[in-house]
Amino acid sequence: MARVPRQKTRPESHPVDEVLPLPKLSLYGFQHILAFYAGAVIVPILLGNALGLSREELVYLINADLLTCGIATIIQALGIWRIGARLPLVQGVTFTAVSPMIAIGIGAGGGTAGLLVVYGAVITAGIATYLFAPFFGKLAKFFPPVVIGTILTIIGLTLIPVGLQDAAGGAQLIGEPAYGAPKNLAYAFGTLLFILVVVRIGKPFLSSVAVLIGLFCGTGVAWILGDAHFGSVADADWFGVSSPFHYGMPKFELFPILAMCVVMLITMVETTGDVYAIGEITNKEVDGETVSRALRADGVATVLGGVLNSFPYVAFAENIGLVRMTKVMSRFVVVAAGAFMIILGLLPKAGSLVAAIPHPVLGGAAIAMFGMVATVGIQILGKVDLRAERNALILAVSLGAALLPTTVAPFFDRMSDDVQAVLDSGITLGGLTAIVLNLFFNVFTRRRPMEIDWDEIEESGPADPQIGTAPR
Image 1: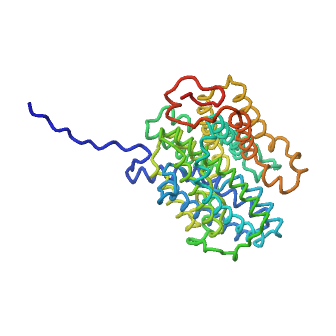
Image 2: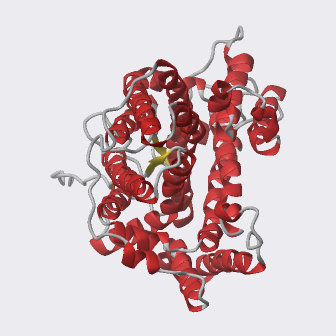
Image 3: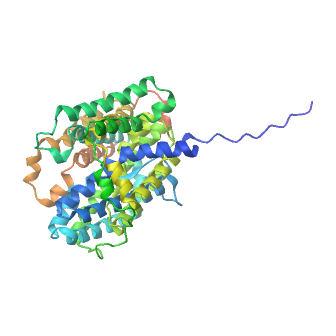
């Protein structure tokens, strides 16, 4: 009997590598922009105001930031050589660097003179991140689920108050009668409720763009009631390019460089958690090499930020929450988002249009997205045996440390500027605590640390109480 030749079937591509039709790429990509925008522009606004920059200089910083975000996002999601995780990760300026950059800039005299010292530190720290990335990737085995889950939970819980602050009217209204006004809360929770209803009753496609629809509808209602204003769009220029070293050649000073290198060390841990989180969401295998490629992209983006008058970069947790909500996993959607960012960076008028979305409307959407980040962390912690005292203490103490900067701010006010520059961040302090406690309890012991196999964790049974991972 003659054998029937087997037909070779092409393996189906993973959803992460799926190229969607152009209309869907554009729509989903623009949704990422709206989710990302508020967090992207807040860092240059905070830094520019702290250093006393003029309005024109502040607008320039925002455009430079958006342009660099777009380039960095494309590098991370698309991948170039051994740079970029090739996962749906959006790159944005890290909040961890805000306090150190303000301290560095003010210490250098403020204004554009302070920016030059900041950029010198940013460029050097970016180079150090790129060079250290392969070694850090090999250390991934020392970041078991108990550490990654704790850090992601901390990131989500730390960002939720930012969303709530926007829901109340935005940080610029703190101390004003309008802050927390019922009208602001109505916009925020009306937007959130609308998103939840669309997800609940909408078809899969509508559910995947629920955040986009909620932001548009919330802004439309605010405009009808006279609370959304588009006057700044008419005043903005049509075209503007951020030229390299716009404020002059950077200045390289030792202490600012050391402080920024410490900041980048923390962002490397944050990126590691984000990479594992997106792998968990998309069911895509993540290993040490994937982490190394992601960190190289962070390093390249940070160097590029220093050259193009921007700042240090990290994978944005906000957009990880969006991927979790929408279940749209294609990295090419994020590439499309990067292209939109570049356009916004080159067209100040277009950027001003997106910036006109009222803070309470953004806050309503952010509550859901930031909460999703914490949910991913909790999902990973579900793989950990928290009945083991060691793992429970790592989680408990790290959560307490993460809340310290926001609940007892005067404690840090009494410390030196050098210490404040590193520790005055819940994500930084909580993340460092989780890493140190894991080393203390699970690594520097007589037991040999076990490498982490995330596929095995998915399939195996009860966790090993000593390391928080499944036994081999």
